[in-house]
Length: 324
Image (cartoon, rainbow, N blue to C red):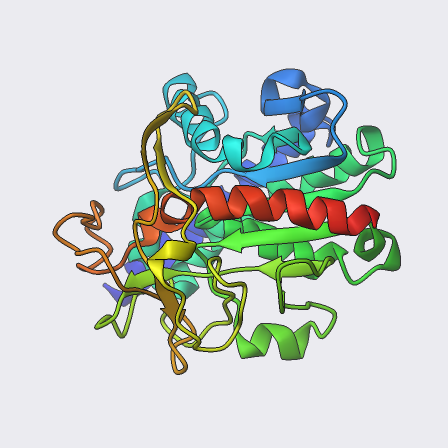
């Protein structure tokens, strides 16, 4: 029985590697030379900066499928919709680029790390290829805002680690909005060029936070302590920010339109132990986790929505600060 399990795992790994090789072989390593492999490609003229944004998880998967196919037109509709929900935060100042990629399915998050990483590597191989192609063919030395949410934030952090130690990339970076993913002490030790935002205007930095109820002490997204900045007062300590600083929570639909806007929805503070953003004025009954992989009080799905207007203003502020 043990031998059969080992053989099965080997076959899965072999198929995953073959999938990467086959895509590269078919497309000559230039998958992103084809416009249909981009959700957004240079959307928005006369903008001050470029946005390279990576979609969160929308593909569910099944017992034998762990990465989204680039031929899956139905999932690509959800992919574009999820990007549209975030788009309004950035589009006032940014020309937008967003690749379709073979993202890891939601079911991958239920696997142990040894089993799941192969599927995240497939996803990242596409993201990396897209970013390389974008930099070579579209960027033209323009300032870059890098952004992602959830799996998209994980992918963005991987790009930061692989590219932004080089002066060229560091000089072009306005900020990396790595929201809904952890940035740990080990990350900063291993990659000392990664810099966390310390205020509202600094550039070349990572802006990151994870929202949760006061009593939450664990989530699959933040199993250990992380670094955060509070999007209400732009402090990194545990200073509490009242809801009067919340410019507006916005709940958007798949077209990107704001379906509901609630000014001063909630305040927040950073937990001094976990480093997460504690939400003070809403209940888990009103904002349930929706997905089974999260327990009550994990407000992961609302990270962007709770602080939509503050983030929107901050993108403008940091782009302006970059040029100053």
